[in-house]
Image (cartoon, rainbow, N blue to C red; front, side, top):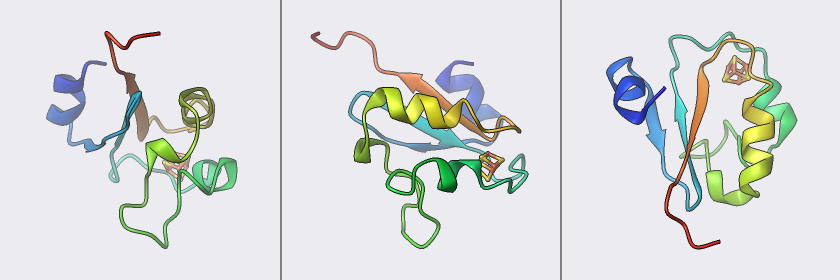
Length: 82
Ligand code: SF4
């Protein structure tokens, strides 16, 4: 999905340097895969509870790929110098 589609569907954006994370609380099934997967990125005791820059882009994408509901999504930044 594009950022526009995600925001239209009610996802909230969490800015990261290399990858932005999007979360939709209405879709979340509370499986806990995200917080168990990486507590540095996902921590419900903190605001904001998602900090995409607390791990590598690859790790952010790896954990989000384990989300069973689709409540978590990511969009990689384009045009970054490699
Ligand atoms: S992994 Fe997805 S469904 Fe599970 S708690 Fe996290 S956001 Fe919700």
